[in-house]
Length: 114
Picture 1: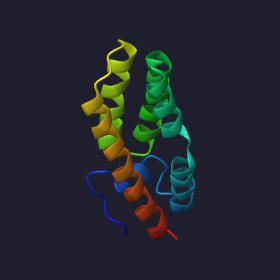
Picture 2: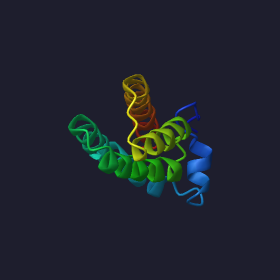
Picture 3: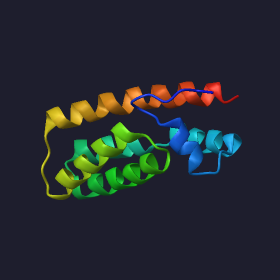
């Protein structure tokens, strides 16, 4: 069994879909190929914080469903700040690092479910 870590809770994610590993793998694949982060980054660079908050909300939902706790929490925090028109470059840089590390963890789990 693939072990959970701070970026992905495999047991919780599988539990949400009654332990169906093939379905979980398919859903993880959707996350891995999602353009959500690119869209978020584009909206942040454009200064369109309202649209960026909507994308962060989408990411929050996806990461909540997949049991990706750190990215979920940081997406929720980012979403709220962007919704208020508040952009903090340090917070966003931490978010990007968490995104990369989460994606690496998801890729590892995805490969381990083959």
